[in-house]
Amino acid sequence: MEFEDFVRARGQALLRYGLVLTGNADDAADLVQEALLRLSSSWRRVRNKDDPEGYVRTIMARQHVSWWRGRRREHLTDEVVAPPVREDEHDLREVWQRLRALPPKQRAVLVLRYHEGLGDDEIAAMLGISRATVRSQASRALATLRVRAQALSGRRE
Image (cartoon, rainbow, N blue to C red; front, side, top):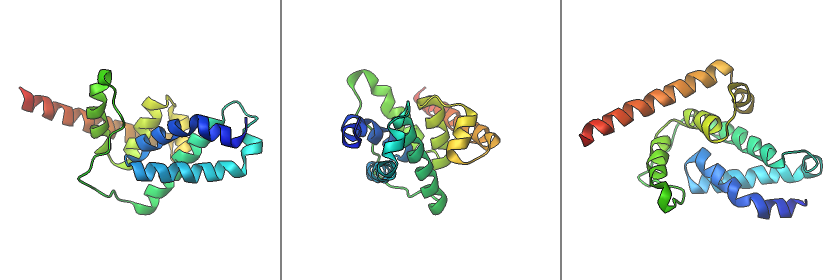
């Protein structure tokens, strides 16, 4: 497969992945563009491997971590960008909003663990953090989500 064919075939999936990581459509597009630029220089070596998409997703995850390490704080906005939701996936919009409220490191760990199905060792290697940090970030994120879910369910009753 040629690089251009790969981009055409998997570009939208990579953009969705970037949106899940960043929570912002513009940042997701920048993340994909940066990752594809890096991939293009090593495409000849990568295309012969079993999983070139996994390789570019790793680039994206590491680049995202690098960006939030450089910023060290979130830029809050009134606008919530949600991925397109089909009629049978109404709950995804609520899940997305709850994930969006988490700090970037916690959000990245949950996305890699539950969306990508990676283990603690893989997440730690991908994000350049320890296994203990992966577990603590996931635990904090899940605890935050539970507290917020309980608060919401308490309001509805």
